[in-house]
Amino acid sequence: LDQPRPRPECAAARAAEFPHLSDVVYLNTASYGPQPQSALAETRAFEDRRAAVQLRPEDFGAAVDRARTACAALIAADPAEIALVPNTSVGLNLAAALLRQGAGNAASASGAGSAGSANRRAIVLPDTEFPANVYPWMALERDGFRVERQALAGGVPDEDALVERVARGDVAALAISAVQFSSGHAADLTRLGAACREYGTLFVVDAIQAVGSMPLDVHAARIDVLASGAHKWLCSPFGTGFTYVRRELVQQFEPDLPGWLAFESSADFESLVDYTWDFWPDARRFEVGSLAIQGFIGLAVAAELITGIGLPVIREHSLALQRPLTEWAEGRDGFRCLTGSREHQSSIVSIRTDTAAELSAALAERGIVTVAREGAVRFAPHFFNTMEEVRSVVDVLDSLTDRA
Ligand SMILES: Cc1ncc(COP(=O)(O)O)c(C=O)c1O
Image 1 (cartoon, rainbow, N blue to C red):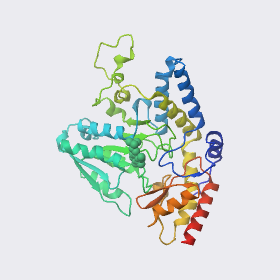
Image 2: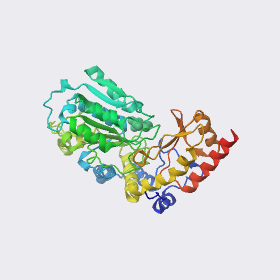
Image 3: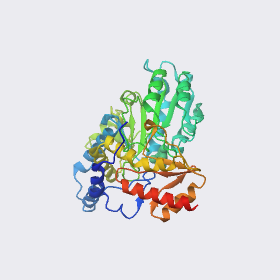
Image 4: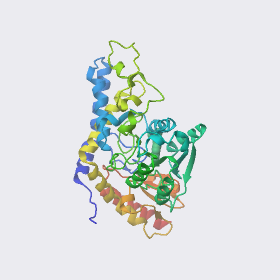
């Protein structure tokens, strides 16, 4: 295999868009990403027009259309499959609502829900999912569903066991993170999605730790619902995100929370009080009321920057930056890197050690920003980080651990 290399496009984007990154070595995008200057400039221009009460018609509909299109491009979806939402949790709760309405049966290869929703009550998740992808499913236990947490194998989701479990034919939904928040393990979405489609299981993906850091193709992976916030790898404002709903499912289901803008009739502001029950045929039907337009302007510009650099380019750059870290941990007593084969690598490198909190704090004192999560130091380099930064981190790790 060719060795991944740092990419010049990434260095150019750092120079143009992120003037504040030389003060520290920022390796914490898995918590939140910095906003690019171009996104801040467009957001400020919008806010300035608003302050001057000079907003134009295109500051509304066109701005959010642009955000839906930019989000769709990140995951190879159609913009009609994208609902703009404030965070991951809203999308996962939307998936749970679809399940309550019978989507676990309607997802079957044979088509529309003939099995009857009473047949399938199991909701399967790997153990140690981020809580955003657990509580919405636990809430469905009030409706007679049963959450099963599948044991990990070697600290990561056991995909063989998940596929076998789905193949028993009674699983309503499988919900998994595209990239697990603490280990950084990237799931084989194509494999899991194929099993789910074959056995009529709704396939739900929490993608906040993946979108913007690697190419994703929701149709190829047969994902039914994908939920993502945008403040991490998409470098977008807090309170912005999107939910993808597979186009065949969009029209089969109605939102539990009907927002007025979810109805086609509300597009005519001259005549709002007809109350015709006509949900948009696309995923806008799942959006609830007025959106945080200024935030979605920031999201659109940042997402366009990322697709402009290219997700395969960002992926290669990130894999290159990880190597010094994984090599440092390999064979070192008391340190274990959970990173597996390249297909299971994400942009997160987690180094497990008994002293994770102390090590992360010692790195912080030296201007290196990481976090300790679940007994590991989590390093999360993105496209704006450089090989020089990562090498300097390895030097600091050497000095800290030699002394210990
Ligand atoms: C896997 C995962 N899901 C969800 C979230 C956050 O959920 P939300 O966007 O609803 O705040 C995080 C991190 O904060 C995460 O790591």
